[in-house]
Length: 130
Image (tube, rainbow, N blue to C red; front, side):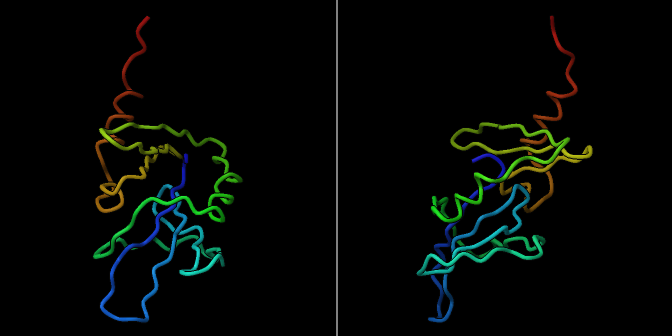
């Protein structure tokens, strides 16, 4: 999926009026768009600065056809380097832009640093062997 991910909320709420949506997030966990619960209506984020708060909520990766179409049109910005890092069971995207790293993992979203970024940074600094 590259730089974005689609997450469907599976939180069970105590009240009836809370609806779970499906979200398209950028590599920093910010909402690009969301599909409204129970329908195909897609809402595009106007500001692009709202981070999805995952505390006390549950999500699963999803493949929403409407949101997936938005991903296909997404291209990395000029001068941005993208690294795919495989963990035991998952794959994460580490992005290097203007000497700043970001990662799609949960640890980075909460702490602002993670082992995936450390691994990429160490690999970038190691000398190339002949």
